[in-house]
Length: 253
View 1 (spheres, rainbow, N blue to C red):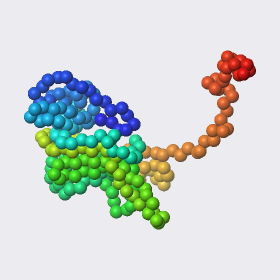
View 2: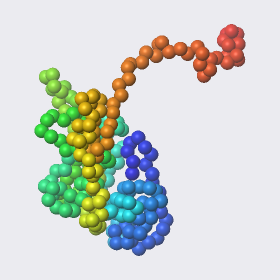
View 3: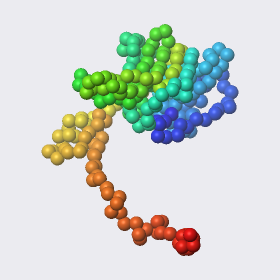
View 4: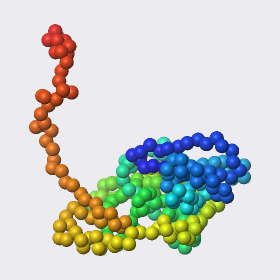
């Protein structure tokens, strides 16, 4: 699984096993080690469980947890006419049910929906306008739909924002699952002991263009002045020089 700027890695497995996913996850552990993937998906279809999709998360070379879905309906992005969101924009994920906050199975499924790194929760202040929104509902089954925003004329200075389906749309039902071991889960969710405030206090007053994320990593921002390509010297560059044959052909014309 990868974002829009990378090529998605997909491998076809022609290995017959009775159940390579939830019950016996030896194949899932082997795939995680071979492909060095922290999270991947296994698609399989059997007579008992057709159109199955299993999401697997790894930690320290072993399976952390798994969640199996059954695909009920699917519509590709090509079936939705209209503009699409460009790669690189972080989506706004909306869960339209109270079960995502109360039911353990739905709470586990929400953790798979967040793209890495996890999206921050919105505060009371006005957030920036998202380019893509992902809507997930739990009634009567798990419905996942994607929308893109459009700015339309409203008669006032502030434009009217409208959501347009962009696809793909996926309807799934919850099937089997494998919960994470409490000790391993606590170890996987462990954060560094140093606090964000302690790192920021060590920067002193010179904090311009320097920020610290939630994991304690310090990040800096570099501003580059606008370049004027008209002043670029191109006469001495070998790649832009004309060959002798080109000069002779121009003289003949």
